[in-house]
Length: 308
Ligand code: PMV
Image (cartoon, rainbow, N blue to C red; front, top):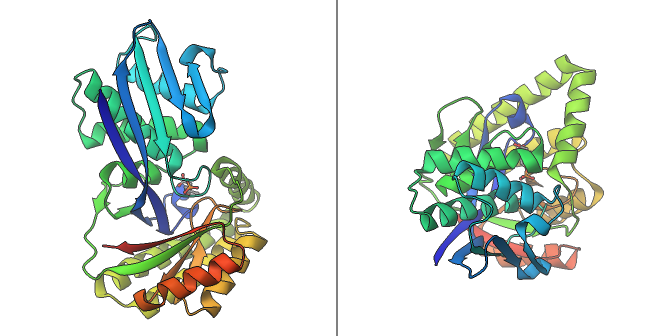
């Protein structure tokens, strides 16, 4: 049997604008993960079990448009694994689906690593990343590539489409509270809606994306220098631009205000938006209190994570 796990992720700055070639910052979240076990099976054909979603099926019995089937077909084809190979694939995940924590990319990375190890194919991180990107197209339509990158390398990344991948070391750790609205929000839809806005007025949105790009550059400097007050202000600025892109929501805005009222240095949505998760930059000693405030104001659950 081979097993592989991959973490979740959050985008700290720059979601959506990253699709239009501006930089973004993302970090892994190791408190949640997806795990894949691959073992042999006595009968021919690939069997999948994902107990959390009550899925127990052969691959070919799943509807052709099922995202797991589509993901696996891309991976199996690239790894030269035939659909008749007698394999049992078990998938478990603690990453909420469609909530901006990278669940799709994390399952893909764990599948790619577990299946390639099972067949004795050695894939370096760059290859895993490329293949995961192919599967991301199923979830996102026009993915920037940030999710597969941060999850494959499991390091903080400064990501810009078409540029060499820059992972970086956080010299001064900082604390983020992640809060889930519990609202299911497919990234494909918010990405598609931002594209419609951009198509209707490219010059306006290009300048909004430029502003986001500048915020991301300044955020990287603030992280490197440990300037948390400024980093918080930059989060607030990024959130205002995300609101303008129409990808926030009443629930996300409410949690952002709650976090700020409870003492967060800055707060914003993270990922595709419209639902899913928001993040708040906090002093570590206030993290529990801010997390409690978010929970009592409608957050389904929270994660306190130290970024290092
Ligand atoms: O997977 P999510 O919801 O964290 O969103 C990814 C970030 C976007 O910028 C909205 C899309 C992309 O492909 O970069």
